[in-house]
Amino acid sequence: MSTQIATRGQAERALTQQIQALYRDQLGHRPGKITCQLFDEKLAIVIEDSVTQPEQLLAEDGNIELAEQVREDLDSAIRPHLKSLIETVLQVNVLDLLSDATLETGRTGMIVVLEEPPPVRPSTSRKAAKKGGQNDPKFSEKEE
Amino acid sequence: MTGARYQQLELSLAEQIQAFYAAQLERQPRQVTCRVFANKLVIFLEDGLTYPEQLLLTAGRVELVQQIRAGLSAILQPKLQSLIEQISKVGVAEVLMTTQLETGLVSISAILAQSLEQVEPP
Image (cartoon, rainbow over all chains, first blue to last red; front, side):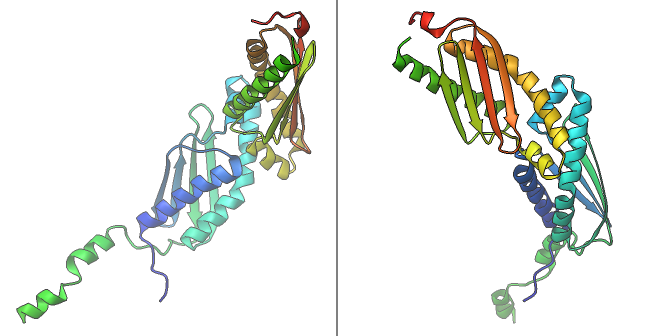
């Protein structure tokens, strides 16, 4: 049996979990809430508390320029990992990955442009299928 | 100060500096060793480089990591000084922190304002 296509919600949750794991493995940092939102052939990601402790210390100490340089370099270092993670989960190519972080709030935002809309089902389809789809066979038999 | 009290002090310093380092930098050093002499002490933290620094080193950004280390050392030195003073109950004249980027070994040395031998037990 072929693998069932994930719903949009499932794909977004898988992305969230894997991005969390990527941050932990690559940066030794546990970020706050991660939000992933798929729309058409685009993906928006917001990561709260994304700034690592060394960057925070440097920024708090007024060493903003260095902290920003570190953020920029860390961004480019994890970008290929992030790109292949998204491509694996969504099974479409990533054309562009734009990201920016604010040191003051610790928030990172990303816009990912995909080659085509990923093969996901709308999140509501499962509920709809359950409601209207299968009848209880026993019940049907009795009726007949 | 007796040999047993030196040992006790070394243990307390190693434990508390390891916890301090982990809390400040999100990095738990693998092993921490402390040696106390009459008027100075040295602490070695193995695997002290943070994940971001390691990632940047892998990307070949040695100079940037050197700048980060210099920045972090400047931030941590005064905090380490008061922590060592608090644990050893002796004034600290100077704290130096250096890191070997190739091995990740962090060494902290503190010059004490007075010799531990002159300090009376509490």
